[in-house]
Picture 1 (cartoon, rainbow, N blue to C red):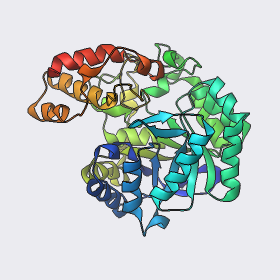
Picture 2 (picture 1 turned 90 degrees about the horizontal axis):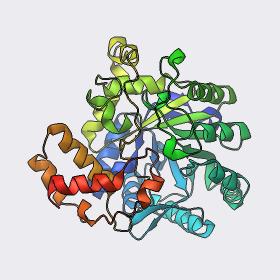
Picture 3 (picture 1 turned 180 degrees about the vertical axis):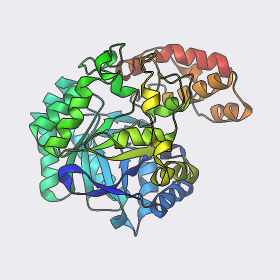
Length: 381
């Protein structure tokens, strides 16, 4: 495993990291197996944005006695309410959730305290000039967090944060498809068909952001490096060809200021697949031929299973329903295994009341209510 300095934090993090989101769908033993596999291969950074107390405890139990092996990105501003993850700027809720995170992770500090999911300029300005940033600084001064980070999908907000100077690193969505897309404060328009042909499809402002981070020594950890797995399928990729995990990882790791790509794993086998990057040759890493044909279409309207649609008033796991639906569409019909997985969901797509609250939070402009109807029709419930 190779290690890179995470900007001004000075932390030496593994270039392949661990995004723990999928651990919400696994029991404590399965979570432990994935974490032990990560440790075996030298992975030393994990991100946990979820407020789910069960998964937090599973992670805490799995790293108990080996806390020093891990750098933890723990998010402030996401809480567990009514059985779902909910973004909030309510400071009392944030304080309670943070203290609980320490207890469940069985630690007295978080390496990087992340300001969670800031995608609108008004939200960032409110955080910067209000009690939220004051709380983050308080946590750092007390030693409960060692560094302040920010998670965002919006290039403009990332730029503003880097230039302001308080934030020491950012968690940003990077992959060759997303890098074609321009920044906007209207997150519903974030993924539109606007490309700069002079850059071969790579948006100039995103390229400038990475250079700015490099100049200001603000490290980047990467989310959505695989674009929810869409880049692995020629039919769903904007490039018209399938990319490999190694190609996706290499693309991310060749952006300026990027220190680690936080990959979501379901199993130890998924860990092993990502780690193959460390021994891949240059021919296996090469992605230029894929980008040469970009773009064929944008990502607007396509779910990447990021979970920002939560919470759902009916407690539908929207991201998982969409994932099962997409997998069934790829195969032409739901397999018996997919039917079993879908059938095990406690709340099915048929429970959707069409309120579209989720759509107002979706950064990709997905027509979620319509997709729930399609999933209900496809799976029969």
